[in-house]
Length: 357
Image 1 (cartoon, rainbow, N blue to C red):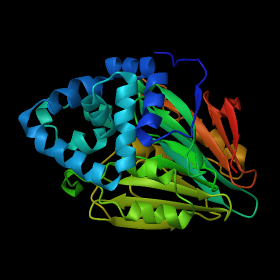
Image 2 (cartoon, one colour; image 1 turned 90 degrees about the vertical axis):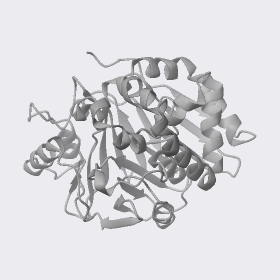
Image 3 (cartoon, rainbow, N blue to C red; image 1 turned 120 degrees about the vertical axis):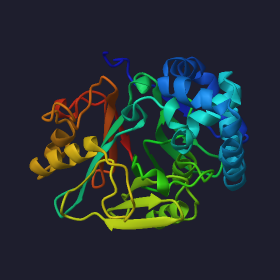
Image 4 (cartoon, rainbow, N blue to C red; image 1 turned 30 degrees about the vertical axis):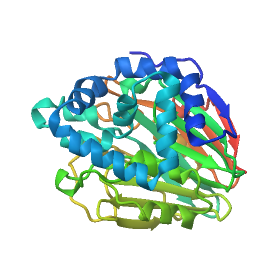
């Protein structure tokens, strides 16, 4: 399957009267894209939706709803607005946003092959005297090809952000930045099922909250304060302080920080410094091993690394059949720019260049 070559759409919005109106405007504008994603997303149609209609799903969905609406009422209303504006049932939008918190609880016999449920991303990060750069591959299931967009939002408090967004989801489970000079990229990390807590705070809500962080410390505090169900890896980037921090999290408020320095730091979809029982992921191990062999001395080297397909079975740059690299983001802290490339980053073609204020 060929990736959709149509350029990623940027939608500018705000300020809005309230979060519901904000979400409704996004939902209305991207209604066709949201419906298209839902009609073709096999994980949604074959796992999430059937499970959501069973009696055993009700207590899980109730606790997810209650806990997330209580902690993040504005983002919950944003989600309600997305459903309203797009004309999609709220249950469908909700379970799409909680997919990572729901999938571990679906009975094994109802799951399709495990690899189809894993989102894979790769990052290489470095802060040295000569460069301060984060390069990120946004990898996802084939259902997301052609079903993403950029939201450039101005909020009533004077905050503004730009975020790469999956159709029907809160901005952003991928990457974004705001006018406080704070940017982030995200990597999925699959903990062992014994490490997962039912009904906790959803990762989509935490990453939406990060778009409003005022500094790297504020971002860490926002991550730390949430009782999550499953783990995640956050790459927090502060262009004002010229710092990159990798934060790995797990349930029960476990958190580990790694300050990125002159030694290039490659992160796939495994915990590297937080001690957690984790699922064995051959794809991540292969990418980690491959990245260790490749040069990392310049920004071009880092782009080339994330465009590498030298390992045919588990390439760093993915082109199907199940997993695709949707785009590559390059954040240069010295230039204060975020560049998005929709082709292989080795080609050097860019779709967008944003200035990080």
